[in-house]
Amino acid sequence: MRFRIGNTLAWVIWALTVVGTLVAYPSLPSVMTTHFGMNGQGNGTMTSWAGAFILPVISLLVLLLFTAIPHIDPLKLNIQKFRKQYDAFVALLMLFFAVVQALIITRNLGSTLDPSYVILPAVGVLMFYVGIMLPYTRRNWFIGIRTPWTISSDRVWDKTHRLGGTLFKILGILIVLSALTPITYAPWIIVVPVIAVALFLVVYSYFIYAQEGKT
Image 1 (cartoon, one colour):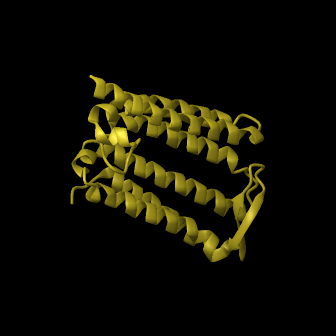
Image 2 (tube, one colour):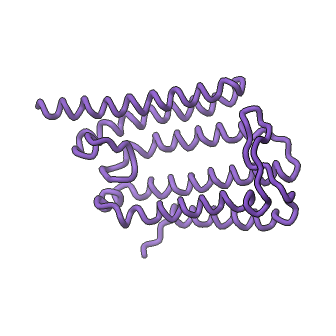
């Protein structure tokens, strides 16, 4: 199997997350706070073993899925054309999970840091990288803006993903900056633009496809 630094880095990040959790586990309370509201206050709990390891298990399942996709996609040769960007995205996603896990662990060890001031910039960075990756993607069944029209045409796929790349970069910056606003506004600053961009790209891909049919 060919060595891929991005894929290897993703596994290393996951393994370090597990090791860090195991080291901290003896010091964790028997009932952990695992969910936090927009005000930074805990509003959900689990037993220590579930609270400590549920996210590493979820991230492992996600990592296994993303490792399998380049081998099971019917258009897997197209994925190889942007495999470097793909692997970097998976590594960044594992880093995001590691940051969330670190926040959960440290809050249960006594930290008073409001998770939203870390989570929002982390989501923004992830979105910005999606914007970087999208123009590199090639038509496939798992990664990218998959509508009936992008899947049906390389030209529609490419044009939609070039525009999508720009819009997701803007979204990423907006989400990072939302950490500076009153926290009650953050959901609206994030959710509304994300939904608007998603709907716009679906409609845009249809019109590009329709235009292609006329020409």
